[in-house]
Length: 282
Figure 1 (cartoon, rainbow, N blue to C red):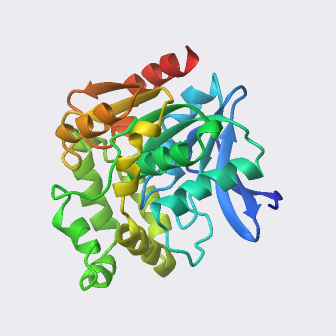
Figure 2: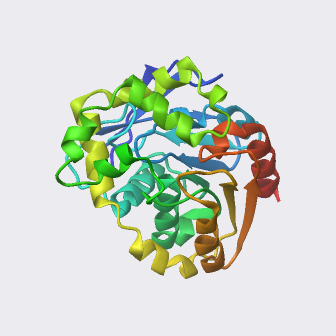
Protein backbone atom coordinates (compact mmCIF):
# COMPACT_ATOMS: atom_id res chain seq x y z
CA UNK A 1 0.00 0.00 0.00
CA UNK A 2 1.52 3.26 -1.08
CA UNK A 3 1.52 6.06 1.43
CA UNK A 4 2.74 9.17 -0.37
CA UNK A 5 1.06 12.31 0.90
CA UNK A 6 0.29 15.42 -1.14
CA UNK A 7 -0.89 18.67 0.39
CA UNK A 8 -3.78 20.70 -0.98
CA UNK A 9 -5.70 23.76 0.08
CA UNK A 10 -8.89 22.85 1.92
CA UNK A 11 -10.48 26.17 2.87
CA UNK A 12 -13.90 25.05 4.03
CA UNK A 13 -13.16 23.48 7.43
CA UNK A 14 -13.06 25.78 10.43
CA UNK A 15 -9.55 26.23 11.81
CA UNK A 16 -8.13 23.38 9.73
CA UNK A 17 -7.32 24.95 6.40
CA UNK A 18 -4.81 22.48 5.05
CA UNK A 19 -6.07 19.37 3.31
CA UNK A 20 -3.94 16.43 2.23
CA UNK A 21 -4.17 13.55 -0.20
CA UNK A 22 -2.89 10.10 0.54
CA UNK A 23 -2.20 7.75 -2.32
CA UNK A 24 -3.91 4.36 -2.04
CA UNK A 25 -2.25 2.38 -4.81
CA UNK A 26 -2.81 5.11 -7.38
CA UNK A 27 -6.14 6.36 -6.01
CA UNK A 28 -6.09 9.65 -4.12
CA UNK A 29 -8.04 10.02 -0.89
CA UNK A 30 -8.53 13.53 0.45
CA UNK A 31 -8.50 14.12 4.21
CA UNK A 32 -7.55 16.49 6.98
CA UNK A 33 -5.99 15.72 10.32
CA UNK A 34 -5.66 17.83 13.42
CA UNK A 35 -4.58 17.39 17.02
CA UNK A 36 -2.53 14.90 18.98
CA UNK A 37 -3.27 11.84 21.06
CA UNK A 38 -5.31 8.70 20.45
CA UNK A 39 -6.69 8.58 16.88
CA UNK A 40 -10.32 9.37 16.04
CA UNK A 41 -11.57 8.64 12.50
CA UNK A 42 -14.68 10.47 11.27
CA UNK A 43 -16.86 8.73 8.66
CA UNK A 44 -19.40 10.78 6.70
CA UNK A 45 -22.40 9.41 4.81
CA UNK A 46 -23.38 9.05 1.16
CA UNK A 47 -23.52 12.34 -0.74
CA UNK A 48 -21.46 14.11 1.91
CA UNK A 49 -17.82 14.97 2.50
CA UNK A 50 -15.65 15.73 5.50
CA UNK A 51 -17.31 19.17 5.50
CA UNK A 52 -20.10 17.67 7.61
CA UNK A 53 -17.63 17.55 10.53
CA UNK A 54 -16.74 21.26 10.35
CA UNK A 55 -18.23 21.97 13.79
CA UNK A 56 -16.68 18.93 15.46
CA UNK A 57 -13.07 18.69 14.32
CA UNK A 58 -11.70 21.58 16.36
CA UNK A 59 -13.29 20.51 19.65
CA UNK A 60 -12.32 16.85 19.24
CA UNK A 61 -8.77 17.72 18.18
CA UNK A 62 -8.13 19.46 21.50
CA UNK A 63 -7.99 16.00 23.07
CA UNK A 64 -7.46 13.54 20.20
CA UNK A 65 -5.67 13.12 16.88
CA UNK A 66 -8.58 13.58 14.49
CA UNK A 67 -8.65 12.22 10.95
CA UNK A 68 -11.50 13.23 8.64
CA UNK A 69 -11.36 11.63 5.18
CA UNK A 70 -13.50 12.17 2.13
CA UNK A 71 -14.47 8.58 1.39
CA UNK A 72 -13.58 7.49 -2.12
CA UNK A 73 -16.19 8.74 -4.59
CA UNK A 74 -17.03 11.66 -2.32
CA UNK A 75 -15.87 15.18 -1.69
CA UNK A 76 -12.46 15.82 -3.21
CA UNK A 77 -11.26 12.21 -3.24
CA UNK A 78 -10.91 10.23 -6.47
CA UNK A 79 -13.94 8.40 -7.79
CA UNK A 80 -12.81 4.95 -8.89
CA UNK A 81 -15.00 2.55 -10.85
CA UNK A 82 -16.12 0.26 -8.01
CA UNK A 83 -19.50 -0.94 -6.75
CA UNK A 84 -19.59 1.27 -3.61
CA UNK A 85 -21.16 -1.40 -1.40
CA UNK A 86 -21.14 -1.11 2.38
CA UNK A 87 -18.18 -3.50 2.50
CA UNK A 88 -16.36 -1.35 -0.08
CA UNK A 89 -16.73 1.64 2.24
CA UNK A 90 -15.62 -0.40 5.25
CA UNK A 91 -12.55 -1.45 3.28
CA UNK A 92 -11.87 2.22 2.47
CA UNK A 93 -11.69 2.96 6.20
CA UNK A 94 -9.28 0.06 6.66
CA UNK A 95 -7.08 1.13 3.72
CA UNK A 96 -7.03 4.70 5.00
CA UNK A 97 -5.93 3.58 8.47
CA UNK A 98 -3.34 1.20 7.04
CA UNK A 99 -1.85 3.88 4.80
CA UNK A 100 -1.53 6.33 7.69
CA UNK A 101 -0.34 3.57 10.03
CA UNK A 102 -3.25 4.03 12.42
CA UNK A 103 -3.23 0.79 14.36
CA UNK A 104 -6.39 1.40 16.38
CA UNK A 105 -8.87 4.28 16.59
CA UNK A 106 -12.17 5.51 17.92
CA UNK A 107 -14.66 5.59 15.04
CA UNK A 108 -17.41 8.20 14.62
CA UNK A 109 -19.94 7.66 11.83
CA UNK A 110 -23.05 9.48 10.65
CA UNK A 111 -26.07 8.08 8.78
CA UNK A 112 -24.95 5.63 6.12
CA UNK A 113 -21.45 6.37 7.38
CA UNK A 114 -22.59 4.94 10.71
CA UNK A 115 -23.43 1.70 8.92
CA UNK A 116 -20.04 1.74 7.18
CA UNK A 117 -18.38 2.22 10.57
CA UNK A 118 -20.30 -0.66 12.14
CA UNK A 119 -19.40 -2.95 9.23
CA UNK A 120 -15.76 -1.93 9.62
CA UNK A 121 -15.90 -2.86 13.31
CA UNK A 122 -17.57 -6.20 12.60
CA UNK A 123 -14.90 -7.06 10.03
CA UNK A 124 -11.93 -5.57 11.89
CA UNK A 125 -12.74 -5.63 15.61
CA UNK A 126 -9.10 -5.27 16.61
CA UNK A 127 -8.77 -1.93 14.80
CA UNK A 128 -11.52 -0.09 16.70
CA UNK A 129 -11.62 1.06 20.32
CA UNK A 130 -14.92 2.90 20.91
CA UNK A 131 -17.57 4.08 18.47
CA UNK A 132 -19.97 6.98 18.22
CA UNK A 133 -22.81 6.35 15.78
CA UNK A 134 -25.29 9.06 14.72
CA UNK A 135 -28.65 8.03 13.25
CA UNK A 136 -27.31 5.01 11.32
CA UNK A 137 -29.10 3.39 8.40
CA UNK A 138 -30.05 3.93 4.79
CA UNK A 139 -33.04 5.13 2.83
CA UNK A 140 -36.48 4.74 4.39
CA UNK A 141 -40.07 5.49 3.36
CA UNK A 142 -39.69 8.74 5.28
CA UNK A 143 -37.06 10.13 2.93
CA UNK A 144 -38.34 12.78 0.52
CA UNK A 145 -39.68 11.68 -2.86
CA UNK A 146 -36.60 13.02 -4.65
CA UNK A 147 -34.21 10.86 -2.62
CA UNK A 148 -36.39 7.77 -2.93
CA UNK A 149 -36.44 8.18 -6.70
CA UNK A 150 -32.63 8.04 -6.71
CA UNK A 151 -33.02 4.42 -5.67
CA UNK A 152 -35.11 3.64 -8.74
CA UNK A 153 -33.30 1.79 -11.50
CA UNK A 154 -35.62 3.49 -14.00
CA UNK A 155 -35.88 7.06 -12.68
CA UNK A 156 -32.59 7.35 -10.81
CA UNK A 157 -30.58 8.84 -13.68
CA UNK A 158 -33.33 11.34 -14.43
CA UNK A 159 -33.59 12.58 -10.86
CA UNK A 160 -29.83 12.73 -10.22
CA UNK A 161 -29.62 15.00 -13.26
CA UNK A 162 -31.89 17.41 -11.40
CA UNK A 163 -29.45 17.73 -8.49
CA UNK A 164 -28.45 21.36 -8.10
CA UNK A 165 -27.95 23.95 -5.38
CA UNK A 166 -31.68 24.46 -4.90
CA UNK A 167 -32.21 20.72 -4.46
CA UNK A 168 -29.37 20.53 -1.95
CA UNK A 169 -30.88 23.40 0.03
CA UNK A 170 -34.28 21.70 0.21
CA UNK A 171 -32.74 18.43 1.35
CA UNK A 172 -30.61 20.11 4.02
CA UNK A 173 -33.63 21.99 5.32
CA UNK A 174 -35.40 18.67 5.80
CA UNK A 175 -32.52 17.38 7.91
CA UNK A 176 -32.50 20.36 10.29
CA UNK A 177 -35.12 21.03 12.97
CA UNK A 178 -34.22 24.72 12.86
CA UNK A 179 -34.09 25.47 9.14
CA UNK A 180 -32.51 28.88 9.75
CA UNK A 181 -29.31 26.93 10.43
CA UNK A 182 -29.07 26.08 6.73
CA UNK A 183 -27.00 29.09 5.69
CA UNK A 184 -25.99 29.95 2.13
CA UNK A 185 -22.34 29.00 2.78
CA UNK A 186 -23.35 25.55 4.02
CA UNK A 187 -25.47 24.96 0.91
CA UNK A 188 -22.62 26.11 -1.34
CA UNK A 189 -20.02 23.88 0.32
CA UNK A 190 -22.30 20.85 0.22
CA UNK A 191 -23.15 21.47 -3.42
CA UNK A 192 -19.70 22.17 -4.86
CA UNK A 193 -18.30 18.59 -4.88
CA UNK A 194 -21.61 17.08 -6.04
CA UNK A 195 -21.93 18.76 -9.42
CA UNK A 196 -19.67 16.60 -11.55
CA UNK A 197 -21.07 13.69 -13.52
CA UNK A 198 -18.71 11.36 -11.68
CA UNK A 199 -19.97 12.49 -8.28
CA UNK A 200 -23.59 12.05 -9.30
CA UNK A 201 -22.85 8.58 -10.65
CA UNK A 202 -21.26 7.59 -7.34
CA UNK A 203 -24.37 8.67 -5.42
CA UNK A 204 -26.52 6.41 -7.61
CA UNK A 205 -24.10 3.52 -7.18
CA UNK A 206 -23.98 3.96 -3.40
CA UNK A 207 -27.77 3.99 -3.13
CA UNK A 208 -28.19 1.07 -5.50
CA UNK A 209 -25.58 -1.02 -3.68
CA UNK A 210 -26.74 -0.21 -0.16
CA UNK A 211 -27.86 -3.43 1.52
CA UNK A 212 -27.42 -3.42 5.29
CA UNK A 213 -29.03 -6.80 6.01
CA UNK A 214 -25.66 -8.40 6.72
CA UNK A 215 -24.64 -5.59 9.06
CA UNK A 216 -27.92 -5.75 10.99
CA UNK A 217 -27.63 -9.52 11.33
CA UNK A 218 -24.14 -9.20 12.79
CA UNK A 219 -24.57 -6.26 15.16
CA UNK A 220 -24.41 -8.72 18.06
CA UNK A 221 -20.75 -9.30 17.13
CA UNK A 222 -19.87 -5.72 18.03
CA UNK A 223 -18.52 -5.81 21.56
CA UNK A 224 -17.01 -2.32 21.52
CA UNK A 225 -18.55 0.43 23.65
CA UNK A 226 -20.94 2.31 21.35
CA UNK A 227 -22.52 5.68 22.02
CA UNK A 228 -25.49 6.25 19.73
CA UNK A 229 -27.14 9.61 19.06
CA UNK A 230 -30.59 10.26 17.64
CA UNK A 231 -32.48 13.49 17.00
CA UNK A 232 -36.02 13.27 18.36
CA UNK A 233 -37.26 15.24 15.36
CA UNK A 234 -35.34 13.27 12.72
CA UNK A 235 -37.74 13.10 9.76
CA UNK A 236 -35.64 10.66 7.71
CA UNK A 237 -34.69 8.13 10.38
CA UNK A 238 -37.57 8.26 12.85
CA UNK A 239 -36.59 7.69 16.43
CA UNK A 240 -38.32 4.30 16.51
CA UNK A 241 -35.41 3.03 14.39
CA UNK A 242 -33.02 3.66 17.25
CA UNK A 243 -34.21 0.63 19.18
CA UNK A 244 -33.33 -1.67 16.26
CA UNK A 245 -29.66 -0.81 16.72
CA UNK A 246 -29.66 -0.17 20.46
CA UNK A 247 -31.18 -3.54 21.34
CA UNK A 248 -28.83 -5.47 19.05
CA UNK A 249 -25.58 -3.86 20.22
CA UNK A 250 -24.26 -5.52 23.38
CA UNK A 251 -22.53 -2.51 24.87
CA UNK A 252 -24.41 0.55 23.69
CA UNK A 253 -25.87 3.72 25.16
CA UNK A 254 -28.55 5.75 23.38
CA UNK A 255 -28.83 9.51 23.70
CA UNK A 256 -31.73 11.37 22.14
CA UNK A 257 -31.79 15.13 21.68
CA UNK A 258 -34.93 17.25 21.54
CA UNK A 259 -35.58 19.88 18.89
CA UNK A 260 -33.02 18.24 16.63
CA UNK A 261 -33.27 16.70 13.19
CA UNK A 262 -31.19 14.21 11.23
CA UNK A 263 -27.94 16.24 11.16
CA UNK A 264 -27.49 16.09 14.91
CA UNK A 265 -23.72 16.60 14.95
CA UNK A 266 -24.15 19.74 12.82
CA UNK A 267 -27.26 21.22 14.40
CA UNK A 268 -26.48 20.47 18.08
CA UNK A 269 -22.72 20.34 17.78
CA UNK A 270 -21.93 21.85 21.19
CA UNK A 271 -23.93 19.19 23.05
CA UNK A 272 -22.61 16.50 20.72
CA UNK A 273 -18.97 17.50 21.14
CA UNK A 274 -19.23 17.74 24.93
CA UNK A 275 -20.90 14.34 25.27
CA UNK A 276 -18.55 12.59 22.85
CA UNK A 277 -15.44 13.94 24.55
CA UNK A 278 -16.71 12.69 27.89
CA UNK A 279 -17.46 9.25 26.43
CA UNK A 280 -14.15 8.85 24.62
CA UNK A 281 -12.05 10.15 27.51
CA UNK A 282 -13.21 7.59 30.08
